[in-house]
Length: 373
Image 1 (cartoon, rainbow, N blue to C red):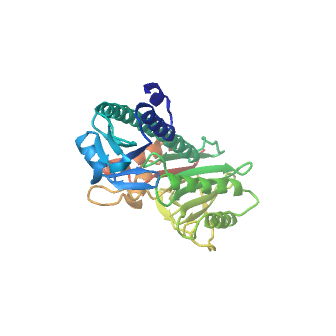
Image 2 (cartoon, rainbow, N blue to C red):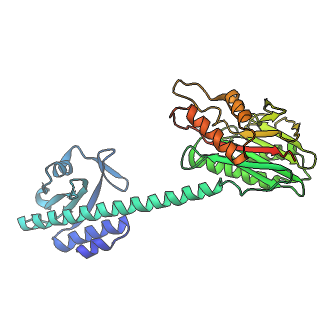
Image 3 (cartoon, one colour):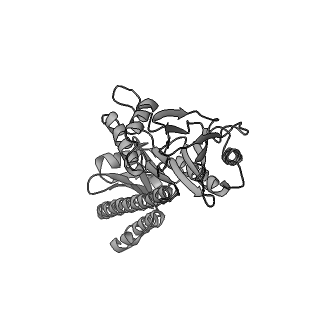
C-alpha cells in the first residue's frame, strides 16, 4: 500500500489509489476522498463542495479521530481525518460499509488516513514545484521576448540603450533595425499595464516594427500600420503602447521622430536641452491617427535621448517626480561621457533621487549622439 501511494505522480491517480487501498484494507462498499480547501473552509471533490465547519467531516477534522455515522439498517460510514505530520488538514476519507466496523478496522482506517495525508501533502508539493517551473519557463520566455538587441555600430554616431524592468518581466523595450547603408530605424516602447500581459503586448509591437521597418516606407506610414495592427489585436482602447519611433540618416545627420503617447526625446544641441513634443496618441487606441514626423538635424556632438515615462515619473518620499527638467540637467552635465556610462549614471541619479522609493515602472532609454570627428 505504501509503495502504491508513493508511486503516483498525479493527483487523480493518487486519489484513486487511496480509495483502492480502503477497499483492500476494509470491508466496504464505497470509499470517497474529500480534499480540504483552506481558503473557503470547505471539503470538495470535483464540483461537490460542503462546509468544513459542520457535520461529521468537521468533527473528524477537529478531533482528529475516526467518526462513525450510523445509517441504521444500511450499515455505517467511517469519516477518517487526513492529517499531515505537521498537523495540516488535507481532507477526509469517507468509507461506507454494509455493516458495523470493528475497532481493528477503525485503527486500520486511521493508519490509512495518515498515509493518505502524507501522500496528498507530497503530491501538493510536487504540483507546486511543477507550477513554479512552468511559471519560470513562461517568465524566461517573456524576458526573451523583450530582450534588448545586440549593440549596433552606426558610422559617424554613438548608439546605446538600457533596460531596467521594475519587475521580473518588463513591459518596455527598445530596438533598432538597419535599413541599408547609412540608415537606421529605431523604437522605444512602453505597453500599458504591468507583468506578463504587458511583455506580450510590447513584444507584438516590436515584432510589427521589425516587419514594417523599410527604407521604402515613410516613418508616418510605418506608425499608422503599427497602430492598425495593435488596434486589431484587442478591443479598441483597452490596451495600448506609448512609443517613440525614429529614423536616422547617417550621411546627413537627419533624425525623424514620432512620439506616440510620449515625448519622443530630449534633444541636447549646442549645449541647450529641449523636449521634443508628442506627435499623436498612443498606438492601439484609435483606429485612425493623424501624425507628422518631426525632423531634427543633428550636428557634431548633438545628442538625442529617448526614454519611457518610468524614468521622469520616478518619485521620492515626498511624492515629487524626477521630471524632464532634472533629467535634462543630468543629460547636459553628463554629455561628454561614453553613452553606456551616461545611461548608467542617469539611472543611478534617478535611483538616488528616489531616496529608496521603489521603482514602480520600467525604465528604458536609448541615446544617439553624432560624433565630433
